[in-house]
Amino acid sequence: MRTDESIQNHGKPATELDIERQALWAGFICSILGLIVGLILFAGNRPALAGGLSVGAVAASTGAVAAALASAVAFRRLLLSREPWLARIPRWRQAVTLIGLVLVHAASSVMILMVAFHLMQQAFFGLRVDMLAGSLLVSGATGVSAYLCLVATARTNAETLSVVLGIFMASGVVISMLLAEDRGWWQSMFSSLGTYDAGIGSFWTFNTTLVVSGLVLMAFTEFMTRDLAKLARTYRCRPSLEKYRIAKYLRPRPGVVRWCLLAVAVGVILIGIVPVNVAPEVHATFVRLAAAGMMLLLMGTTVLLPGYPVVFHLMSLTALGALWLSFLLWQEWNYYNLTGFELAVVAILFTWISVFIRTTSALIHDKKQQLRKEKRARRRAQREQLAGAQDPAASNIDPHFNHGEIRRNGEDAGFQSR
Image (cartoon, rainbow, N blue to C red; front, top):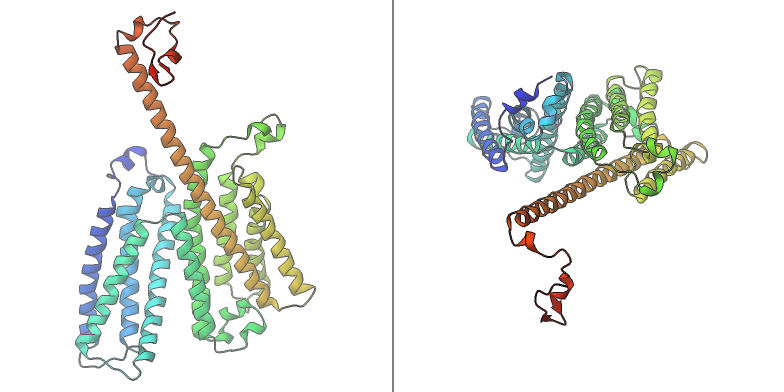
């Protein structure tokens, strides 16, 4: 763990201009490296845009490496200076956060570039490019990947990380569906996408998506816990509840929320590591672990997150009821199969998480505004008090002077003493 002195010596917080400058340098350097790799691999060839040793395959590989390096550099040189609390957490938690950010940006770059070049190949069917054109395409894709990933990592917070997590999970699952060789996979369950029966492409894409998503969720937990800790320090119980003994238990509990989110993250990671066809009971246990973490969080929002709007707590209870209704539609009424139930659960939970994050961000923003107003009011009062102490005429004013007589009906009433 780093000391406060070492954190202070780490340097001033990175500015927005610092981020843009280093992102441009990263994009420039990585684009040159991508150009060199393209010239070497495409020498004497006319590569296609997708498939085999194509422009898309090389661009995805170089883009992933560039994204990983840019994310690592941004974390160490920019994010730690902008978020000094990250430097205070234990090293292993820093490492988990770093790995999650690096992997999600690298994997996202691979998926986006592969899909983009595949669509380009479909649009320009049969097109093959020469060595120079292919190398320039690889260079551009590599440079853009490095630039965007460095900027995204340097500006990471709970809200942006949740968006990245949602997009990555949705993209990974959709690509797994498209790569599935068994077109009837949906007749059993979602987890069947992570088996060899669905095809090697679907197997690796689905399970990799789950593992990386779990790591990103662990990184997201650090940022969310930090935001909740900020709210906990400024929380004040409602005066109408202070007279009750239970009021002392109604305070924000970031630690419990953190452990619930970590249970979900660990469950998701282990679900990806142990496919359903390898050990069905173990796989089901990990699913229950993730579900238990979310259920505890939904049921305990009133106690764990006091101070949030009433409508947020109502939505949490509504989400809990929607999950129960989804279960009944599957298990009791046979309205849909297990895949339908899993889709409903994922949609409900991600909707709730999105609202949870936005509500927390709004509360923190309002608290900051309130603290700024209180700070300005204190400074104004101090200036007025100091000016009154330094003004010799102010000390000679009759204490019985009625300031209300200064203005009467819009006319100057003069300074009159009683």
